[in-house]
Image (cartoon, rainbow, N blue to C red):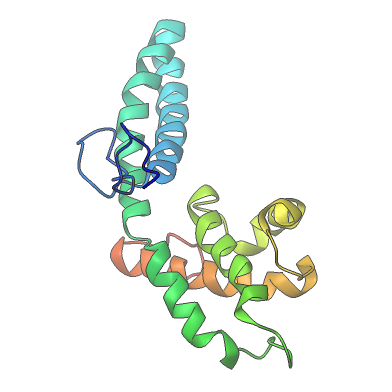
Length: 175
């Protein structure tokens, strides 16, 4: 039997960089850390000068990491994929002969992009999403004009999930 020795045969546990718990969402944690660090650093710098900016950025990065982790923990990419696999064919933009293999990458793109553009609407983020679609689409045959509807659907579903769990109008849709 051809077995590679010394490698852990179990899948990556995706451990949380802060707590060590299994199931971390490092992208959300990292994005929250960057956003939190920038905001706190700017605020501290205004009050305390350059040294305050450095200290504020470090403190803000830790606090922001917790905030980004919280948002990312609300999003379950596996559950979202299962939902869209079961429901994609009922969407009005799905054409005859279209398969989930065509639309799956667009749904995943919306799910993955939402935390990256947190606090922005889909319409605000769309120019950047359109620009990156060719890199993100993998084997999908869809152009952005066709993929954007699925991306927006999954973005909105994730946004609604976050908004139900986090008080306030996180997606700025007035609801």
